[in-house]
Length: 426
Ligand SMILES: [Zn+2]
Image 1 (cartoon, rainbow, N blue to C red):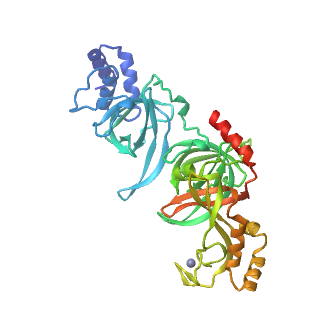
Image 2 (cartoon, rainbow, N blue to C red):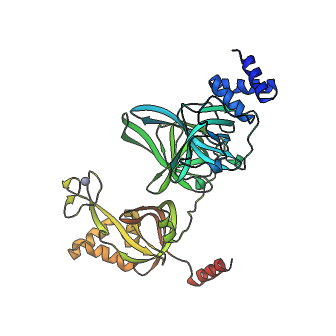
Image 3 (cartoon, protein in one colour):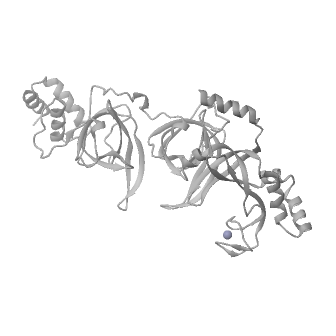
């Protein structure tokens, strides 16, 4: 049967204009939708019942979709399309993930083949599976599903999310197909053993006006240089030690920007309890009293192979080793809402100690006891309030804040009381 005949038959069955039906069908066929599926889709669009299929999926608004409710059909606006390569049942496969919206809500999807839709397209997706992920329904668009482009745009309150344009502060683990404009603050090249043997990746830190985040580029691009202002499209976000991390895949695009991206110098200041409760944060600032300087502070030795701290000449991984000297501080801070262990590197430790590592070694030799260094540090810190900025990680052993900055608080207690009062009143 010719397209004309299909259109004629369908138009008379639905009682609508033949040219309109024909154009809808053409739209669908252009995306390799089989003619029978295309006719069903057009029938549904015009309110006709879909014949020819048993237990046809029900047309749903996004807000009404529930896991376990059977397959569904939706007419939606495509917000984001992220492309990713995964290994599924031993085979490498390219999938598309992102978000769809209608006037009732937003839903995530995974498409197991390229249905040809792009951000901004309005589509009717027929026979999509529904699965639950992290407590929310998600659409599974597979070989049994159909996708037809709609000629009339689907209006949604989420149109500003089309294309996935994002500020760094808004990114969360699970985001797909996002676009960001950033400056590269730090970048380093590393060799890892990946899926296909040894591979080189780039990792570092990005910033924009709203914040800073770590990144990994799994398909290293020379444009990712320190100081470069770049636009990334089709990046995804995943969690690494409780911190969102921007990931560039082989499908991400990188464009060098003509104008420099403005970046922020400050980190958000949080209560310790709040920061720890968030499960970890990249670049955060807290204020707390030092309760205690923990064992393993002051002069320490590190394994030359793995940098782990050596105890009694033994590395946990490498056994008896000749350790390299180093200095650090592990200080427990408390602000009344929670506690965190601030970890200071050698530079910050030397600053607190008020001398170089050579000075500390000399003092230890004189006293014939390394602990004099840790004791001196404890005398300086304990009972005083410090401002710490750094990266917070939380695991089963507690919360550690790897300090980039560590300074005695200069806040006047009276000023702070006023500030708190203002906050309460506001
Ligand atoms: Zn070791």
